[in-house]
Length: 94
Image (cartoon, rainbow, N blue to C red; front, top):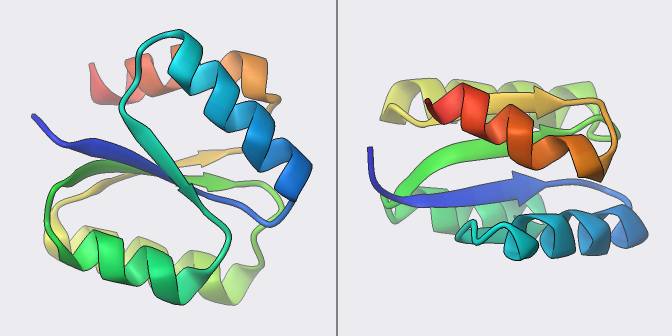
């Protein structure tokens, strides 16, 4: 499966750390804090995985999960620290 990794969260500091962790291991990833902007990117059809951070509220979480299911995009709900994320992503995408 080719494509980008997108991640969505609510905490700016945590989003910066996540971006640094993923970049450090060479993952092609882009972060979003705005649901509408994320939806635009997801609709482009080139995402393979959406990581949803633990601080995301239930309503947007469920909307994004439903969208991804309809479009064949894997979803990873991550509740751990950013240091664990690269390994967790590798497990999710195989």
